[in-house]
Image (cartoon, rainbow, N blue to C red):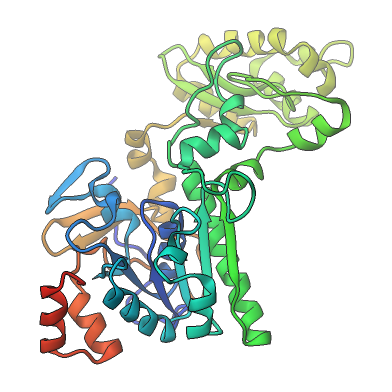
Length: 412
């Protein structure tokens, strides 16, 4: 499948929901910058404020694109942003940022709590510059509490928030839950939601506010019923491996050709459908495994029956028979599978965006899909400082002599 340009009505020039909004992205790596990227996809002007000379460390994370030191990670996740270099450790840099805050709607940061305050850019200062400002603050442990000053990354959040404990096979070490950046992306989503809620409140009150999101809280919020279950009777869920504690059969099964398929029988009706597909309708009888509670209690035996059936067929046959029988199933895809899949193609999930130096670069499209005012990808991650002169000239009226002086002092 050849990736396509972001399709349909997502054309340059079409109105987007956040047109006219300006966001200052002071953050690094993934979490708060992902929030800013989402806002940028839907129309906000996002100005990425980076340290002169080095920039956001995300630029060097992952596979190099061959454009300067920029990685594909950077090209994808810093989409639709302008890059302004500004040293916030210098008084001139702080002054310029304050002047930009006056002309902005949102500031995104994910430094350790107290860092902005150390630079003279705490909420008291920023809100005085612009009472309508929304400040998004994402950190490992939040702005309050005994752990607030601890450094945090997604892996730390996975562990502290309870997800890593649930990931892996029973009796095995806790594993990485897929992407090591998962917690960052989840926190970034919550951050974007928080910003939009704060802006909606500003519409009514005229006042901005702080959005405080901890990485570990974003992870913890997604862990099903483990909190109320523990509070009720002390249940501590452990690692469940290929299955789950709430339904059966509900997991991953290997096929005869060494591939894997996911099955999700979340109800008695779904299990009956699977038994019919397997030609083993007797397994769904009342005296056997008709009821979910009994299947869960005897999950090893149930899974063994399903595994035997799966193991005698190749993946294509399993998927075809399950689809015909309306059993929820899917291949456990690699990225190569994703690039070849007609569903991804039909939805335009792989967008080929043109970079002036690299040509076409394939990235995930914009989500969610809005019917009337969709988001779009205008540009990939910018070159370091590529928009410094334009931003300071357009917004603050700085001329060539001003910019030359700032460069000589290392402010930009």
